[in-house]
Length: 398
Length: 221
Image 1 (cartoon, rainbow over the protein chains, first blue to last red):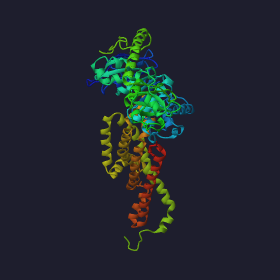
Image 2: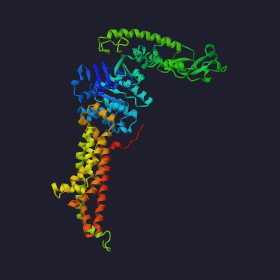
Image 3: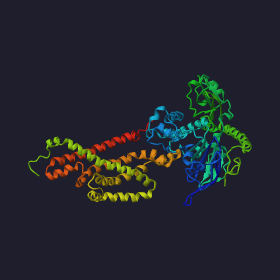
Image 4: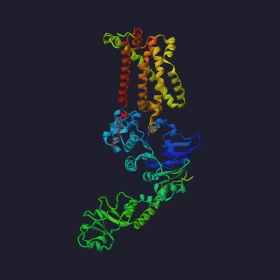
């Protein structure tokens, strides 16, 4: 799809922004370029739409050397989102979104109709169409930026730290929205960030760059966390990569046990009979109400009378990861994570040790499967690093 | 001055309204056409200076030097080529506007935020199209601020052109002085000031209409 062939960018003052990069980015996936500042990730991104011209090597898009295409024309076929949205302040939201279709010569009505669809797609109300960018919040501006980039339906989308300038809550919202959009659109996305957490959250593949424009590792997020190519990558990925890897294990795959779960209508005597320090009290729909400390229960009556300790939080077997499950266990007063189904009804409980053992088993199984897949898929249009196959840990290290 | 002569003889004004209107029209033409010509020169010149920064200091120096030459001297120089015509007044006035307008065009273009410029390029605007459709519209508020200064100063400078017989309402100032008759002098001064104020107000209005986006800086939820 997008291919870098021994690409370098040197500046006249002697700095090397990108150093002999060879990289092939898979079609229809999100590739994240990540690294410390000055590692050449943005330069790499901008070489894809010719905003930066390489000093050596070739960049090709769908098998065609991009230098064969007139630069403005090439760019109209590639969506681009930047950090501060970069909306045109003198144009309404709708006209901002319609920018590329207008450049492509669509008629105004068609372009605006399309822009209105995009406005809805990125989750903004129709009445925002007539506003000017300075009347929007940062998060809204960024959504408009994404809509603008997508308006002419380009197959490729370049995103340069698109969510870095907004506050953490809005960022999380935008990231979730972005994942939802990508599930719908299947664009080939190249995403630059300096935030490894964001890279792991969003990337199908991650290219880690080191200072001096060298590629340190190109791998899936799972493999990056499990098998960092060298000390630099391990350090960059961070010390809690063990915990982070849990994000890739579905909570549904974890072993749960029934545990001490009682309805609020159960008599106190029944709670004592369970012979556990804590019992989980649930309502008639088996939705958890809270933990009851058995030692503190008054004699007689039902559990409905007991004062309950809040749950911390539960984890969902549909959608949550093992990381949420472990967190649930750590925050629970009973040290037990509570797993719930789509309706919020308790499925079972597990403590941190049980979760950890379960996770390790799932990861071991997945690891075997992944390497088999990688071997069999190496002939397909799978991401590879240079001449080395992506399934080799540290294949990108040079 | 004659002690019996009042500062204003209203009857004189009433008798001369048609003539005053004619001279007001001439004055406006002599004052504002140079601003228009100045703008026509400054916009491309400013774009070039913005594009190639090395060009800006010499351009600025030349336009400032021209501004420092007394208008009287410039009129006398141009009389040799264009005679006692309106052009002889308008050419120097045009040159004067450059020292205000060129820097404002350059500053206006520089006021375009870098992410906007970057986004425009990345969307696939060619260089010329980007300047015309993105950068110049965003520069409008700063450019108009310059136009306001240039217009007011140009309108008041027109009167000096009376020294070569082309001064618009300046005619009444010299006439009044010759005849020791204050009414036309005061009338001309007030009219010139009103013209300047009205022009300025119209330019403010024009800016509001041209740049609806620069108002309402409300951050909504």
